[in-house]
Image 1 (cartoon, rainbow, N blue to C red):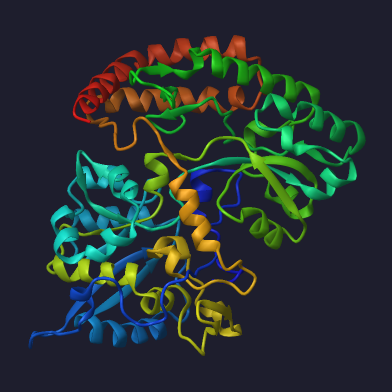
Image 2 (image 1 turned 90 degrees about the vertical axis):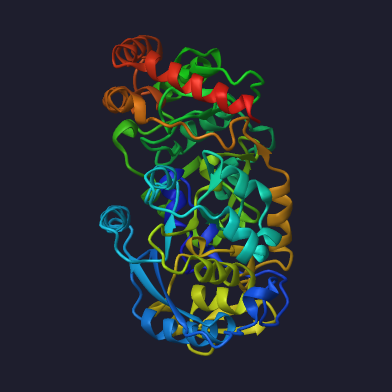
Length: 499
């Protein structure tokens, strides 16, 4: 809700090296009444039926005041939909494994958090962990359909079926070159001309020659040059070009675009613009905190520069490094699914509908109890109270972010700008396609081993790209890359024929 709110640990796992923003805050220009958009889900008319208790598992560090807030949530939902919810939080590192065990054992639950990076949404759906929700959305989730950009639901289909409700947040993914403005101003550098990796060179040279204690290009081992592709498996060499019209699956290590980027990375490494130990660095966060960096690459959203600046304590500016593109993984970054074992799927969808359309419930779940954890200082503006430290939830993981209250420092048009940003997103040509690797699991495991051996060193410029990409390609092929690409192409062609 306020700047102390988490900035989305989830997305930082997806986009290493970037401070991600989705969870930072809340608020929109939603009406201040206490009803959502779906009258059916808001009436609270139980028709004499006994209340239902829904069991909900979500991700994040368990909060001290969770039970206290849960009690207030239940007072509200009991009146609205004749249901209560038992909130269970599992910590970041244990969430996926515990949910896998619980679903495999058939444990009773109704709603669970899932994503492309946690309790793998696609694989869990294919294994039968989730209930198909297409019909439930039509019958009990009309409010969700009204507020959610259709691309979220289209991009999160698994084999043509929806199994989860995506959080309404930023839809596209867009990379930017992010700069320490103190150094930009000190040397009067023009960042407006920077877009490509290669265009960074004169700026990096200036910093290297004048600032021996500054890292010119602050990247870590997960960095990967942008070459205009959508990857079928994250950080595997199989991809489809973003401007593709024929859905051709290629080995990116053999493409001229990637070869050029890798040569530039090697040049930067040899010039000393990149940390010597980059291939083994997990993060450059210490340099960011200390201000001893000049530029890096990060995922953006509207007003990102303001949030980065507030978090780091000094001004940060940015310029686009890519176009806003809608990928499967950007759509699936935060979702709520209904368990295949749920005994109350209709009521679970009613709750999700309320959560995604009712600003009172959404902000209670996100920020706690008004007057205890936060105070409203305007119709859609709130500030944290000291007790908020006992209830600091990851906003991105809890549904419609555009319903959450604004911070006092936020511009009034923040959520309007999010909607504009979402509308500007261009779908990847393979948005909605999910590669089923079940027939090539042995090959995938072998390819993973090859990737671990070569990927970071090649992508960060640590080694000569010509020599080492040739070695990597040879080993990838020996591990079965051609077989996997053939299967991926077969599935993709079949999918494309039905679009």
